Image (cartoon, rainbow, N blue to C red; front, top):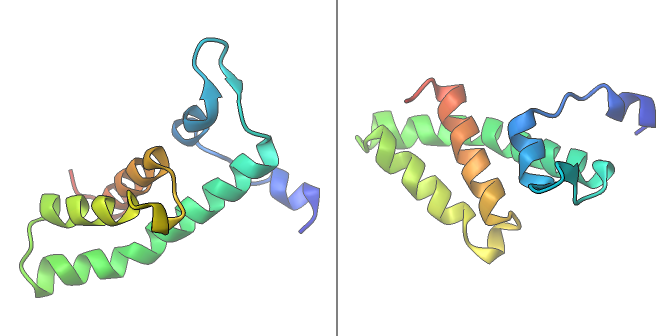
Length: 100
């Protein structure tokens, strides 16, 4: 993938904040790595939409419970995501589903 294409991807501030040094507001992680992590998190949130809808509508699990279960699964070391990324993915999933 070319650098030009990668630079066209807008990374939301909410995700950039996960990788910032809070005292100096600078990224602690190289931007290429942040971009890759963002793409992985955004892709996962998009992929989880159908599964979350199935759990909620077909199995009758409340929206809050579905999101809590998804986040719990993402919080495990095996998920490959950091705890902050797990929270971000869950919030993004709720946004995509238009759940509060």
